[in-house]
Image 1: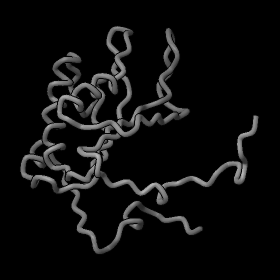
Image 2 (image 1 turned 180 degrees about the vertical axis):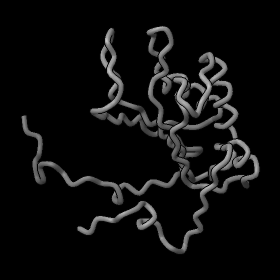
Image 3 (image 1 turned 180 degrees about the horizontal axis):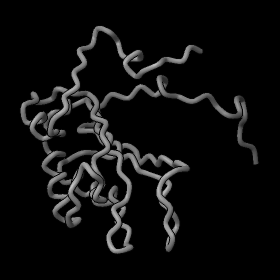
Image 4 (image 1 turned 30 degrees about the horizontal axis):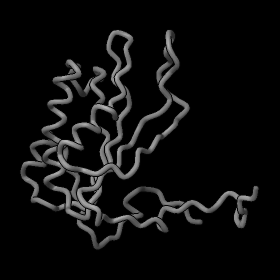
Amino acid sequence: MQVKDTLFEYVSPELHIEIQNEDCLSVLKRTDNNKFDLVLTSPPYNVGKSYETKMSIEKYLETQEEIISELIRTLSDKGNLCWQVGNFVDKGEVFPLDIYYYQIFKRHGLKLRNRIIWHFGHGLHASNRFSGRYETILWFSKTDDYIFNLDNVRVPSKYPGKTDTL
């Protein structure tokens, strides 16, 4: 199997690709309705990194809901939206962001197709609780007639031909 150097080597050269380095809400507001079949994003987690301003969980979710509303508007009826998030921690208390985001997406009429857990072995170490070593991807669609090509992402069976017996 040939290893490809960049993600762009996997993309058909016939597709138009454009990278914009500006505020996502500004770009989305200029984007046509139903333009995208797939939105895959990992928004800031409101933890005070250099590219974000930490705010209350309520204000953070309110600002994200405005972006979500625009993403849903730009998503085609057959499209999928995958939202990857971790946890927000405030004064030692953990807020699992996917639980909060689920409510927002449901208010906007989206249907949850999968809750995918991504486990990793790196990250900051906690001293008074277990260290967070996972993030959650919430996969939503607008309708029941959404694009899903299982065979394109299918992983070969670990035990081909095995059947369950009692």
